[in-house]
Length: 276
Image 1 (cartoon, rainbow, N blue to C red):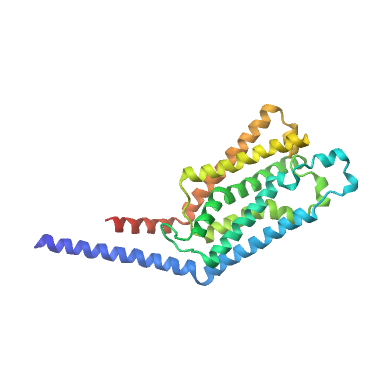
Image 2 (spheres, rainbow, N blue to C red):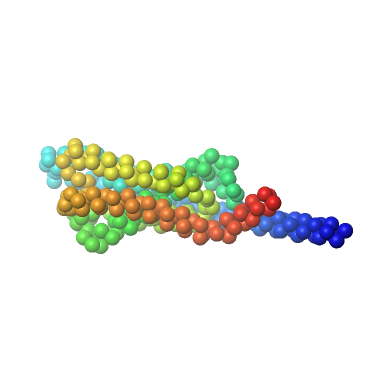
């Protein structure tokens, strides 16, 4: 009889714990899917999608070397156009990501749960994790470090006359800042380490192959720094580019686990209760 009462008491405590966990998750979801937080997330994605889309337009159609300053040999080195620059490819990537995120805000799912049933959200989360966050931080940090060391190696001063400073910050600074803002407003579970790392490394390796294709047809490297480095240091630099992109991926995974630690803890408790 005593044992039966003890079991009933334990069952009652377990039910109360389960209800408390579900209540806390409901409170989180009420905050994240409605009210000010919902509109903050929507605002971030609207501004980012609009900003990067306009940045692509301005960069592609309005930023050009004056034709009277280019001879035939210089025109040849422009093989690949602006699509040979990681910066330009990244701003396209950011525009695609934030547009996906905006569509998910409008038609998908932003709840805190173990596995989203929204395919749109699943795509959004993978693109952010494997590509948008790490490439944005790779571009931002790499650009500004080299710029401070010797800007002529990455962004020659001659570009100041044709490349406005606001656009420079859109493509080299805001890409990272808005990725951080997105992380703080969008709950997500990162993909498996294998899936995330595979997508991350595949992207940057394809870009390095693209650099060599441009070099083959134009006769010059895309970035002046690759011209001045000896062969061994050049490929060490490219290897570091791959490694740093991976570091940026791991940084995003770590930061996401810290930002959403409380929510992950609640989900783990809910899973244990269901399994128990």
